View 1 (cartoon, rainbow, N blue to C red):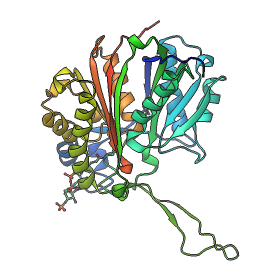
View 2: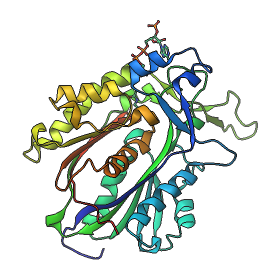
View 3: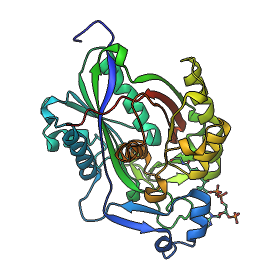
Length: 339
Ligand code: UT7
């Protein structure tokens, strides 16, 4: 603990990475019984990027996204104090963050994984901001990355059409509290519905002959799409309103609505419920599909590249997904300090 006064948090830089290989809806219709029309109408997705090639993993994407964010502000990786990797698809159950720490040369950083599916990035951002606000760390790299293509059942048309692979990264830095960007957050979990969206671990039927220990393996993604859809459309607006109310703000104050990129119909339905104009929605899922923990930082990075977000804009960010876990962060955007 370095300081007893509460620090502010600013988002200093962003970066992202997507694989080269693109699979469009027509190509998916060669794999499962579906069509471009069905996928476009029901989800808004047109294509998604998939990580191909031997021994390619989430680490490869996360490194590119991280270097991208570091390069934009000419920051030396040794200045990073903490790396937080939000992912549900590590290439090691003990975690993948340390491999990123090693490969980008963040020699002074501690690194760990955080698992909260499609809400992983928002939870990671707030977790990181706590370390900054308490004065423990100055510079933190938060990565949201997932390669769900490795966990999809490519014969299940209810899920394989949705997901894509990507990584997004942000660098947070401490600042005077008056310049604080992360204004408030509101998070929720309801484990009652965990089985609606899961990559389940299943045990074998026979135990070890001597030890009575059951061992198993992870199975592909299972999703009850209709139930997850209803949950998102009903709960996400409530979380956003609670988060704004605590700041004495209203939905009229929102300049940009940045939701987890699961389904265009969900984005529109949430905006409609909150009477937010559709032109305030940040959306890029037509190109990338649902990239889980990567979707929000990827869309944020792209929106900034397109110069959509201006200084002092209020950006409401909301994640939702497996757990079921969901929540909102209200950000007052401060211009990036590009080198
Ligand atoms: O990131 C985590 C959060 N995840 C989400 O937010 C996902 C939320 N859910 C959804 O986005 C939607 O529920 C889906 C896009 C997954 C599905 O859309 P839906 O409008 O809820 O479709 P449905 O599951 O109710 O299925 C409607 C029909 C069914 O046929 P019947 O029973 O009406 O004859 C399905 O078998 O569409 C059929 N169907 C398909 N048809 C063509 C399901 N998937 C496909 C497909 N192509 N890919």
